[in-house]
Length: 210
Image: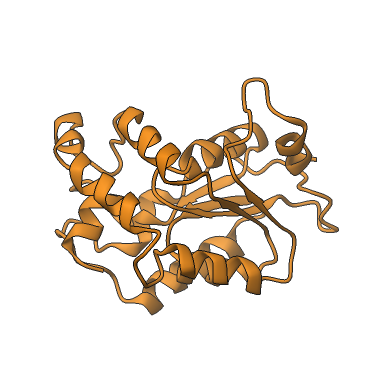
């Protein structure tokens, strides 16, 4: 991952460590028919696909712990320095094993795969380039990724380019890697071509909480 990747997908703001991502909202939720009664959901997709919006909603509604994979993928308090893949994967494994109910979200296929051993529902958000770009243009300030709204706006052009090249590039943050991850997974999974309705919530997303 290079500097443009870091600028595009975001990284923890200065002063935060990757442990920020472990948002212990609570431990509720029963979860999509699991025999152990826990809700576990992994959300994968392009920047701007709606991953964060959906993940936050699920965590708030269920009381599940939430992990933003951006915050384990990059070294804290450094510019464009990716963490070792094995260290980031180890943090994902620790998070998933430590929490009963959880939601993780991100664009890193390798880190999502680290969570799939826990047999979550895998949600692949794939609404298309135009919708992702529109969502990026309208997203509010993300203080856990950028030190100010001004800094976030300054990096918008990087983000839009990153979204555009998702469909043609290679690597763990590409469409091809996401499709491969999705098709290889033998557990429960859903590919969504648009973000499900959350206000009021659709029957599909409510079923994930049951």
